[in-house]
Length: 431
Image (cartoon, rainbow, N blue to C red; front, side):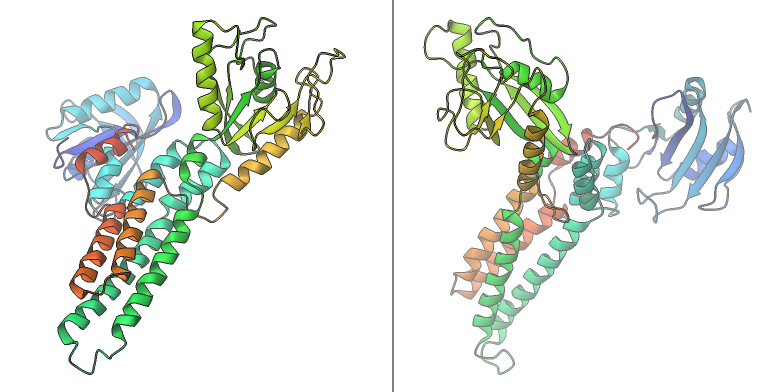
């Protein structure tokens, strides 16, 4: 990746389509646009132009073109857009002509957004929000991602950073002018109170539900002995044949995970091997161990086995209520009685799951921290706690510096190259 190059890429959906958008970003964007259409249109105004091959004047397409002089652009560089007819051949020939222009090359994955970050058009938290927005599949994911991409967390962190700088200035004043009246005898107490108050505010943000549940889904594990109806219930919940249903004990031997959105909430339902202490052969026994691990890591366990054996927090589910078989497992106080075959009780179970899941997800208006952000804010609060407990002013100042550095890393003011590669490499080409 060469930062000085001018890059181009298709930034709309794959053709054929009604319109295909090709973006060009970099120092030669204006020259490339002028070469195709014979001159630059007025800045930030769409113009209809005939596009020609600069080598032989062959007509390529008639397109709307836009010219955005930098740095007030999406990437912070000169930027041009070609709104072409969306046929494969049109896109292919325009890309071929652009690639022949010296200094231009096809963009790599996420390179437009990476340039926006490097040129100060967005910070790292906003870039992570944009990434989440691109991969969002539910309304809850979209709302959380667009808040992050719009800079909601960034503004909070910037406010915390300014407060750390203010507190650091007070400590420096104590160090440099402690013998003068301007500082005052209670300056140390005031600084300590400010540090403690800031730590509490950031601690509240850390205590909120994390982004992983919102992104990956609430993990619901269906567990119980063989033939308790787990696979049938899974298929009913996700409304497709995701698991094999059979009366043969041990049919499900490994975890079957199915992501699905219910009521705008992301879930991952996991069917597990039937739990039994005897009669399982080697492969099934491995599946049983994995089932117990899945139960331990679940947000909610739907227990279809004998009452009281699923764990203290498991939901007791009585299944197969359509059967008159006296051997069917009955429960005195199940949370739900259902028949996955007839659908009886299924709507109530789904509604209960959605309601419970909403308590595990970030509330509307809250910022959901991802693992990186959570780790750095934890480092910040640890440093603030150390600063609050230090009587030695030099050590307090150093702890405050470490708190500020953690906030700087969260916003990407100090960054690690391989972390940026991982983030922007997940974007599509042209974004």
